[in-house]
Amino acid sequence: MRQYPIWVKILNRIYKSDKSYGVKDYSKQTVYVGTSKANSRHFVDIELRRFKEKYLTKFILFIDGKIMKEMIMDNKSKKIIQTNKFYKEVWWDIS
Image 1 (cartoon, rainbow, N blue to C red):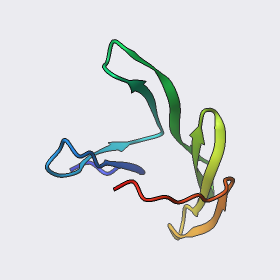
Image 2: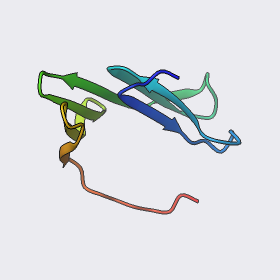
Image 3: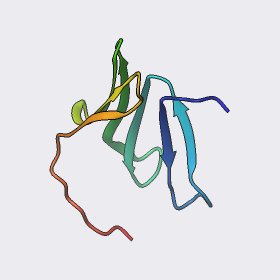
Image 4: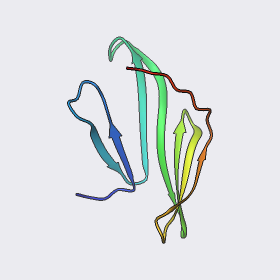
């Protein structure tokens, strides 16, 4: 199995188990909501990006083009050295 720096795991009630895929540098998901594929409207864009420099790698999560979270990793030690959140946490039960 190939190794990817970004690994996306999807959980959906129509699947018996989760689905996952690897991403090298960039992933974009566009979510539409409504009653069917033909009768849906754009809801949100979700992007994951990786920016690799000589000593650091930065992973950034964008929601509708705005940075929501970033993580910085030291390339030599592979340790996370900084995590920043740019959102207010709101929780509710969806079950």
